[in-house]
Amino acid sequence: MPTFVHPLWGYALEYPEDWVWREEGEVTAFAPHEEALSLTYQGDRMGHFVVRPELNPYLRPIEPLWTHYITRIGIMRGAKKVGASPLEVGNLKGYEAELLLPTKENKRLWVGLLAGGGVVLHLMVTHRKDEKDYFQPLVSRMVQSIRFVERTEGVSLDDWHIPVPPGYTPAPPGEVVEGDLSGQKWKAYTGDAPIAALQVFFLRELPHAGWHIDAYYPYPNRDREVRFASFLISQEGQEGVVALLPRGEKPVRGDVAVHMK
Image 1 (tube, rainbow, N blue to C red):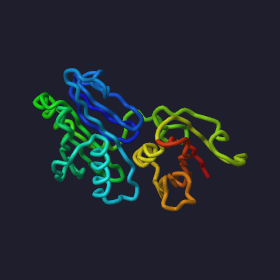
Image 2 (cartoon, rainbow, N blue to C red):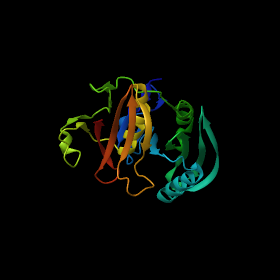
Image 3 (cartoon, rainbow, N blue to C red):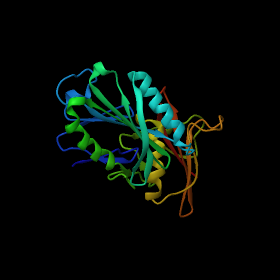
C-alpha cells in the first residue's frame, strides 16, 4: 500500500494502491476514485475516509474535544450515537464511535479521534451499507497505519540552516514584518499554509536542522498580547527567532519571518 505523508502536519498513513486522495483546506480525503470524493456522488463505491488535523498546543484533555466532535457531526448529519469506545493506534490514543444515520440514507458513518502530542486527528468514514464488506477491511487498515513521522523528507534549508516549509518562497522582510528593519538580519517567506500546520512543521523540523528550541509561544496564545507564534532558537552560540505571523480569516494562514541576533 502507498504511504501518504502530510509535509506540514507530519501524519502518515497507508492507503489502497488504487485509491485517490485530495486536499481541501485542512482536510485530506481518500476514496476509491475521483467521483467518490464529491459529496453529491451516489454511484458505486461512493464512500470516503477523511482526516482533519487540529493543533492542541496546551495538551487539553481530549474528552471535551471528542464530545464536541461527535455532537457537531451528529447535528450536521442528523445522526444518533450508537456507542463510543477507546481507540488506540500505536502510541496514539482517542475514541471511536459509529453514528446511526437516518434509514433513508442507506449509509454507515464512523468517526474517530486520535491524539499524539500537540496534534489531534479527527477521522470520519462514510459508505453505503451494502458496500461494508469492501470498505471496512480497507479503512480499518488505513486507521491502524496512522502515525507521525520524525521528519519530512526533502525539506530544504536556507543558508541560515532554517527549514523552509514546502510551498513557501522568499519575500522581502519589509513586506512581512512591520517596523524599521535596517541594520538587522531578517529573512521572510510567504505561502498559503495554515498557521497551525506551520507550528507543527517547525516544532518537528527545527531540531532536525540542528536548532535547539529554547522557547515556543503558540498561536493562538492564552496571553492575548501574544499575537503571533514564535520559536526562540539557538545553535552553537547563534541565537534567533522564527516568527509565524497570522494572515487572513479562518483557517488563519501564516507568513514566516526569521531574525538572527
